[in-house]
Image (cartoon, rainbow, N blue to C red; front, side, top):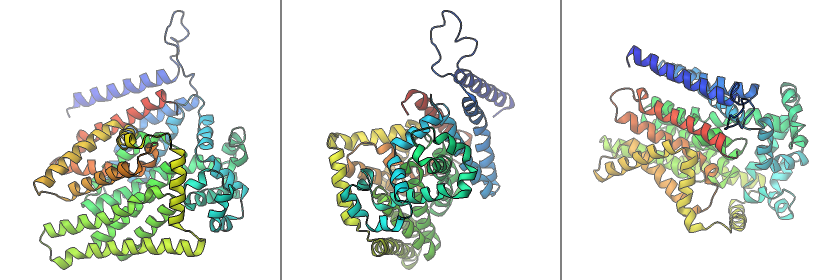
Length: 482
């Protein structure tokens, strides 16, 4: 890009940030003029100014993170992306009409019941998890607990205990005080901790995502590009204070990344750790069960790649042995949870499905097998969804030509997983239920773009896609009842 074009881009970006700030501030100097028709709907505040500052600085921070990644300063790059994502999520929260009150309401209406149950059963964590089924049948654990395995409540039990610890109460004292004047007053310490901790957990997903790109595709840079797309995803930025978007993408991506590392390097400990995480993820939510298939899929991709490079059959079979270790660890961890905590996964799964069937009786299942993909695309971000559709089409074409390489195989595997989710689930609310798939789709896009470009694709396609995603998130924030 020439110097004149760089100046023009900088000027346009500055003008856009200035215009956005003018609107967020409530059109000062215009809104109070006689005859001014379109009154500002937002009064503006210091928190709104914070949102403008984050919007102005985020692109520069992301650019600095990618430069640090190119210089192999991975700790700096990854932590920068985590902080950028968390600050962007909080900045979009600042655009809500009631700001902090909106956050407390979202926590209260989402999984707030878990916080209240955790507070009521403080000091009885092990007994609660061991007697989960009987407590659910008696209604002691509320309505949400019956729809999930015990792990979700276990997370909130831990959050309640951490929130009540003296260091947390001291550090978060001002936030706790604000929470005490809201709908979450009875669980204020845990709610304040969730407000701070959940955004960080959401964007810690960038770390295993980069590791997955490096292990599966020999390209950490593709992982970084995918991480930027995850950070800018409307779902990640807008679906907040809810474990479906906070912890489950992190657990799912970490499990698959460890499976890929084990398959690529022949590292049994990584494969075993990936299996343990897959089991813990399923213990938290049955929605993460597809992660087990994706973890095995990594081994299949590595084995197919080695056979394509004419490696001996014994060499190509080693990734499959790692997949068996991954599956064995998943099964063993589930069995250990059953032995130690009386966890009965099949019974709990059947009971959860029955309850979901009761709740979703109004949902036309056949129609939602198509509409679920539409809803997921809307909240993953239409620009991302279109780019992903292009990659799926290219991967299918490569398969028809028998030119299937690792990026294409991964893309088809993720597409098959999404198709299976739509076919078997047939329900709504998939925007948050399938959020754990967004990092995997982002990696497919980044890998495909890089594979087709002899030059650095960050010069055009991927930055434009990330910017479009972030802009869409802002528009969705100010036009939707979040």
